Amino acid sequence: MSTEDQQDPEASRLWQRGRAEALIAARGGEIVAEYFDVGESRALPWKRRPRASALLAHLADRDREFDALVIGEPQRAFYGNQFGDTFPLFVHYNVPLWVPEVGGAIDGDNEAHDLIMSVFGGMSKGERNRIKVRVHAAMSSQTLMEGRFLGGRPPYGYRLRDLGPHPNPGKAAEGRRLHGLEPDPDTAPVVVRIFNEFLCGYGIYAIAEGLTRDSIPSPSAHDPRRNPHRDTRAWAKSAVRAILDNPRYTGRQVWNRQKKHESLLDITDVSLGYTTKMRWNTQDKWIVSKGIVHTPLIEDEMFARVQDIFRGKARTGPAHGVQRTRRPYLLRGALICGVCERKMQGHWSHEQAYYRCRFPNEYGLANRVQHPRNLYVREAWVTRPLDDWLAKVFLPHRIDKTVDLMTATAPDAGRLDVTECAQARAEIAQCDAKLATHRSALEAGADPGLITRWVAETQAVRAQAETKLRPPRSGTDTGISREQVADLIRAAGDLTQVIHQAAPADKAEIYQKLGLRIRYVPAQQKVLVEAHLNQHIPDTRGAPVGVRGGT
Image 1 (cartoon, helix red, strand yellow):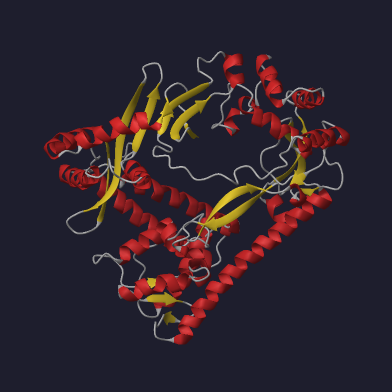
Image 2 (image 1 turned 90 degrees about the vertical axis):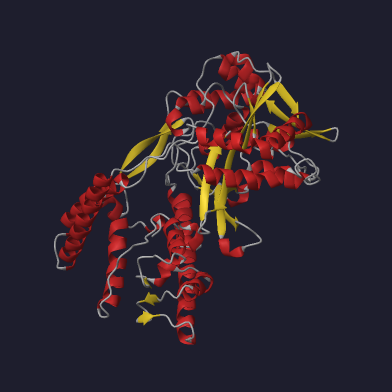
């Protein structure tokens, strides 16, 4: 089930399981394992859903604990053409697939069965698209006609105020409230100051520096819990620009400034589906309320003048970046500035690849951070000794030492106590029995509210018991044998034979697979390099084994 369905996960799981049990009960079937994804969109292919991916892995296991698979509703399991991409695996591993709409197992040679499942996949896709259209239309109408605040983080300068129960009766019964915006006495004057200074001729750089110098908390510093990833030391120019571009300060509600854009995850493998990214919409697609719905901080005329200034400074030539050519950066994302601990950005100059860390000047002036405005390091200065180091590490007569280093840095796997495991399994079995009893009581007409509370309590106990069966982890995969590490090192040794002559794209891939982490320390004119190997090598049975460690 998807979180967008606004359903109780346990209730959704129970009715789907109920349909599955009803189908197999007449044949004496019994459910021995469950694969139920919560919070995952049906548009994701099976290999990208955690539990569905685990099911596919178990299909290939000869020691699997099930003989067939039964699903409660095909629209939940298959989206679009996913059935056609997935069912051949069931046929290959000789695992029947049971569906209520077919009345039993699907016959791969039956055209009617194939047509029915294809129709359900199309219905699932159509249902999702209809929901998207309805939600977009409803939110557009609520913004345009009512000026309703549709959730999210209030803009800097405002805070939320309670407007009473939610107009939706169902949500109101759940205790949901309707909220609106009101000026924040601490930050609203700062917004007014920013607009006034900009119209007086100050640039966004000067405005940001002045706010920091006057010890006015930035948006991230004002509300650090909602911006944990932001730098709170000073005002950034981007924060000032975002405030000057926000039309909500005129008292009108605005929606659809951003949209979810779906793009193919891998253009060479369409079956992997899409990935969703937020992108900014052009201003003509914004939905702006017709009237003023909250207290304005600035006038319409002031906001319009600010936008005219920005438009006058806009580029009139070709779009930025149109003529760019893709440069190969071998250490992309791996080089860290040793002063501020931020990733250094690639920069091409004089036919050479450089990496630089540009620290905004207002940070250095207002907070006296000891950071040069620009730090540069040439790529060639790093890659040449780096290649020599890698070649030495993976030389045949050094493999034993390298393996010792990796096994020493890899944490030992936590061992589970046999008695505790037995107790945990007994608790899980008891919880499963209780859940079956609760389900029967619910079907017999018991109080749904009471049953829901019992189910939640039982699920909490079951989840706690499941955690006892998981080995302790310390942030990296454990349980690495010395033989596995040695096999990986020997495989990597083949790469080092050609690493000096490898093409840039191939060398960048080698660095990435070796998990290089490079920290540039300008005071010492040195780089500190770590290789965190993260490869998948086959064990003696041919199954992939994850190996991680550091040297």
